Image 1: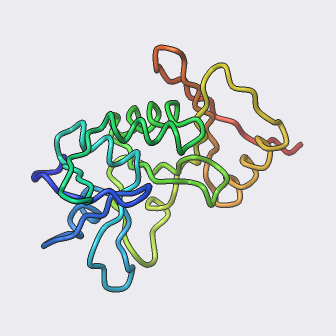
Image 2: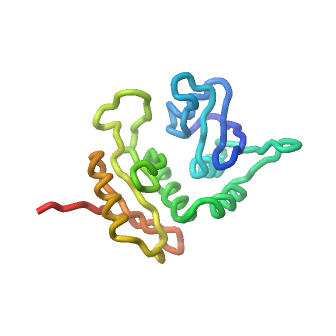
Length: 187
């Protein structure tokens, strides 16, 4: 886990962290996204990562208004529930996967909530080996959620196009997660 406590500013729906050795949080631990990508001066950390890091006491978040106001994980969870559809199941899945040692990033461009990398993979800019590519594309839902079969089918096809496995993560009322591997079979 991260060996220092980072400090970041809440800006809309992300936390901006800057400072010396800022790339360590991305290169060594896989959190955030370097901005700009060619000569990064800061890291943008999404809500899920921010909440998780606050809970682990590795990130302090503030908001600048008239003065610096400290933001707690409960504040970000409240904002997340207002801004992000199915926020609670996504947070439960993010937390569960990170606790299991997986690297978890947003997966919107793949038609799902998250993309997940195998344990031990470090994100890097530039060409990747087969092991360093996305292993799973994952969609998180609560057990009461309805879903569209065409939407599910599209997500499975997208995952297969990038040689990843599609995972359907169902979160129950106790925030326990059950993972279902969904595959396309061609006879």
